Length: 161
Image 1 (cartoon, one colour):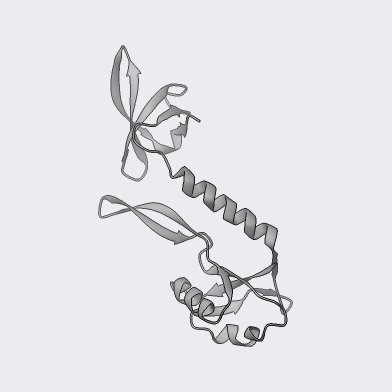
Image 2: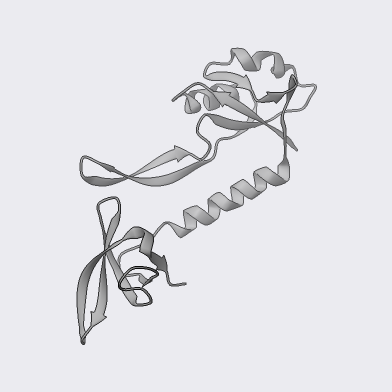
């Protein structure tokens, strides 16, 4: 299978995807779940892995090529030297398998064992409790035979697999 990249109009990826699929085009629009802070609350949102782009699978002789540029939501087919840029199926399969791994991982969950990799508590094991804003986390560290809640930067913690 040969894939091609399509650039879509800003904020119209879903529209381009729907219109391409309505024309019988096989599409792949990779999205990931991200956590954002909105109005002080942590929310989960699906965002495009490659903002502004989606992938299509078409045969070179398919008559749909002439309709791609006029499809609602589509800007252009990504091309070099006036030839559509080819993306091999192996690359698309790697992206798909990477997405599956990311989705199954799902981030750090409350009660999960972690290790602090940097900072004053480096090398200590802890238990993840909650996110504290966008940059920090609250973890429980066993200290002097008691568990202490400590706020640490998210960048300093790692999963203890």
